Length: 320
Image 1 (cartoon, one colour):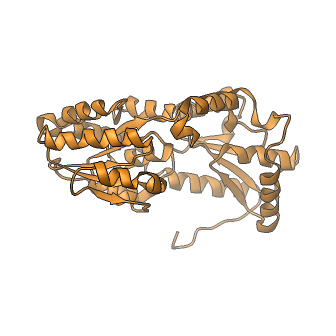
Image 2: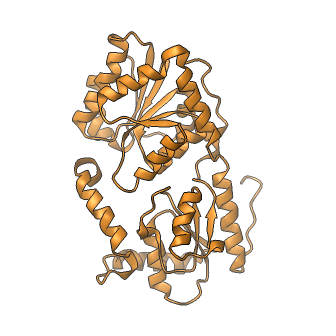
Image 3: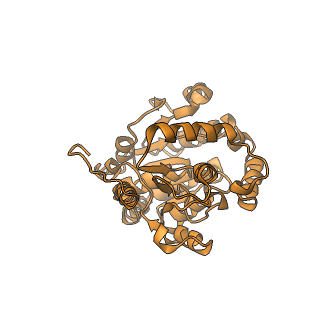
């Protein structure tokens, strides 16, 4: 709710987390979560604990203090380029990061080099094996709205104007996800005719492979899934702080653009489709060039190596 309605407040909270180390807070706001984590660790006896959320490294440090951990700890950092200090914790665990810029943050903050691993951002390997569309006519747009209702309405109207006013052949698919209850009525009322509306789906690899362009926010998973699928992205929203690095990464690799207004969406799409969509194809090629399709396997292999360092012997089954 804060991210969607009060981004200025989220920025303040993000900056606060970057200033006050989570593990050094004088008040323990996570006592209940810590107890549940302790109960889970005691009952499951893991060989390795893989975390994708900053809080858990701090909780493990608080639970075990200076004692050697009986399991391996791997924190998979889901932000890139600009990293919040909340990811830093006092444990002896390892970090899997997206790129060298992210790795430098941890090295500069005193984490030993042998505990910082550039693996890439782990996404489903299926994203990289799907075929891309042969032509860009009609232009297939995949939209994953997450902003306020009125803003989504204006963006849908901008997309519709491409078809009605600019005579651009297009097909639109809208994936609502966890925003379905809030946005379905708006999308049904404002989207172009024959728009394909989906609620929650696990078929993003196939959807990205069938579309020429993704419009959505700069979430870590969204950005790296788009890169892996070779699908250029128009970023219509950047969560202050935590997603700014993702947006910068996409721009740096010339695989995406930031569109700040609905009119920007219209302007950029018209530009991308000029000259037989040459610019759109170039962005798709750049996305594939800078994708990291093997990242998930690298993280899995790293986790097994860390577990072995703790004396646990793990093997992968034939189905894995």
